Image 1 (cartoon, rainbow, N blue to C red):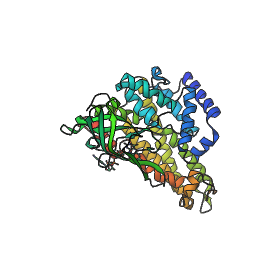
Image 2: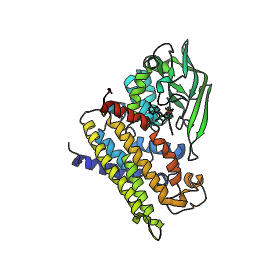
Image 3: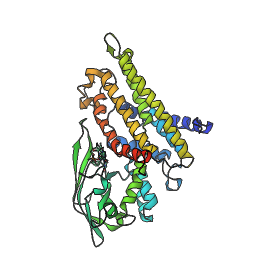
Image 4: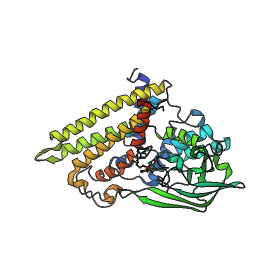
Length: 399
Ligand SMILES: Cc1cc2nc3c(=O)[nH]c(=O)nc-3n(C[C@H](O)[C@H](O)[C@H](O)COP(=O)(O)OP(=O)(O)OC[C@H]3O[C@@H](n4cnc5c(N)ncnc54)[C@H](O)[C@@H]3O)c2cc1C
């Protein structure tokens, strides 16, 4: 297996780098570097810039307006975006729903929704989890009952990321309670403006409004908003999850985070010496760097195999566990390096208020990032669930 980049791939990297240096607004990369939120308008602006370049949908086939890039090109693009502190593209429409519509949607659904995802007219959110149905997703209870040309939906979704900005939600709903759990689930597209929908904020540990509860009371959804066949939603849901878990290793985020830790620890003093010279701290930084280099190589091996046509299997669970452990360790190192300056984590410092930051450069968002990134080992399938998958496949008991 050849893990070096070909001349064409290196030229592609250069092209991406030039594009980012010319088109990524500095105020946006500053906001990302400093851990400040971009807000809805910021996300929409970056979405539009990438769409104008034709680089918004790296994972879509050309026929639907995607880039048609292979796995190595996608990796290079993501890597360069992380290094340049480009905003993360909101994934729910582009990388989660779109592949489901492309594979299982009706022609009308493809023609209607896919162009609107590219243009940014629709902002999608994901209505999978419920109280009591997270890891055990198949036990979901939100009900959809057929009434003429409509389904009538009642129930509650939770942890709905950025649902406060969304005008559409894709939902898993129960359409048959009399069969095995997985066999009674359907996949519905629901307009958030429909009467009977209420979005309630959940404030996370960092003080940010990132997730929500979404309540449905007698919400009438036209039957043409059903994706695929009734009661086949579990198949589409699982297919979507394989797309949710792309770029799972987060190598670029960790590289940027580790560089920031080193800068901070070189500037901060510990007993009269730069913190980075403290043997205990330096050993932890070195261990994180070694782990990151090892994971980066594993990631490249998997990408190289994927470019050769092999679908990643249990490897994505391994990358999820290791990648999130490394990112959380880097967050902890940053928190320790910031010392007392991590304590205030004034939301104004993070969200871009008028007050100047209290501590040295780079310390304002450290605590908020530390708390916010506790989520990494929970969402997208918790790390315990990933370990169960690895154990089943590697220690026996089937996939
Ligand atoms: C910040 C954030 C954003 C999210 N965004 C969305 C979103 O936009 N849309 C959406 O639908 N969902 C979203 N989620 C939900 C996410 O997918 C679930 O939180 C996740 O699947 C875990 O489910 P749960 O929270 O119900 O925890 P539970 O499933 O109740 O798990 C609780 C604990 O028990 C462990 N556990 C559970 N089962 C097992 C087992 N069989 N073996 C070993 N350990 C086990 C888990 O690992 C966890 O530590 C989000 C979550 C977070 C934190």
